Amino acid sequence: GQSLEQPSEVTAVEGAIVQINCTYQTSGFYGLSWYQQHDGGAPTFLSYNALDGLEETGRFSSFLSRSDSYGYLLLQELQMKDSASYFCAVSHNNQAGTALIFGKGTTLSVSS
Amino acid sequence: NAGVTQTPKFQVLKTGQSMTLQCAQDMNHNSMYWYRQDPGMGLRLIYYSASEGTTDKGEVPNGYNVSRLNKREFSLRLESAAPSQTSVYFCASSRQGDTDTQYFGPGTRLTVL
Image (cartoon, rainbow over all chains, first blue to last red; front, side, top):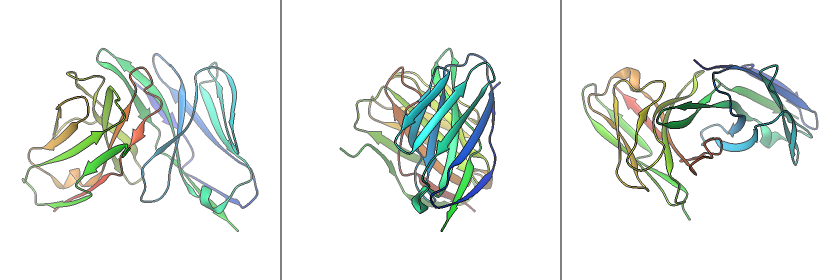
């Protein structure tokens, strides 16, 4: 089966840098995705890593190490609007196609 | 371009009642998904449809059925609602072969009394 582990909560102050870690166990790994969800809202796609290394998109970066079954989301220059839940997810492939399995999410609270 | 739409936004049912949650997307995506989200549990996949004409079970399919009506629409049916099905339900879609980039609807908040 598949399983993902990420911290349940992280707190930080405006302007700081925070790292949200994710470790996974899965058969047939394709890649690691990250989604953001504000309270009461829908999840939105942030990034995807299929290969080892760092992917940067503005203030957000995502890292993957396939050999360690580990990845992280790095958020820089934190802003109040970054307060949200962040989910890592892995692709799961079976005979009918491919779907995502999500971690339980990390709640990030940014204070001034 | 509305993206992914879901109806209704809110619903209250009594135990044993049935209902269908509707989902439609206008992005010409082949793949569609239904998730439920409960506090502290993240998003759990109920059913998905990799392409029109196919459906498959996810992590928590018991108590649900789905219909891929056409390429645009994917509905989720609760035949006999139970309090354990109180949750927020999200529909999502993606291009075929790009499962990792999913687009989510606004969700349906369902309470079963």
